[in-house]
Image 1 (spheres, rainbow, N blue to C red):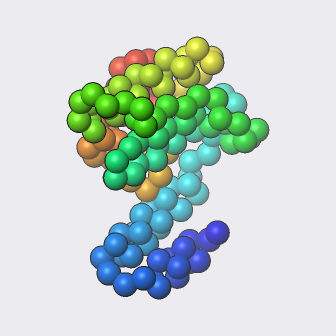
Image 2 (image 1 turned 90 degrees about the vertical axis):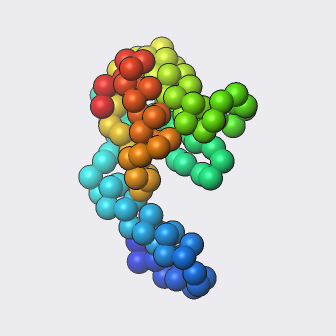
Image 3 (image 1 turned 135 degrees about the vertical axis):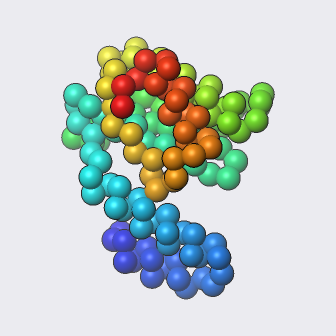
Length: 129
């Protein structure tokens, strides 16, 4: 689906949320033009919903997920603390799979709050990006 198709689809529904969806879609497409994962340096994708944070390490050349983590089953702490926990978890599972360098794909999310906390925790646990 192209950027214009997503923008057109989001404009159909009125309101502020439609504007936010369009802006996020534009940021995501602009970012994905530049960021691709390879076997040497896979892509670290972060998806943020209102309640949870999901992260994957993806090799785009093969189309394979190498490691993944999410806050889905975590209950302790606030959202930012959970993001730090999965940052450390993902870094450990990626290192176990033989990955130490990644390319960070924030998926149109701004680099603040939970996304930044996740990234900092992954860096502290040994991932390079």
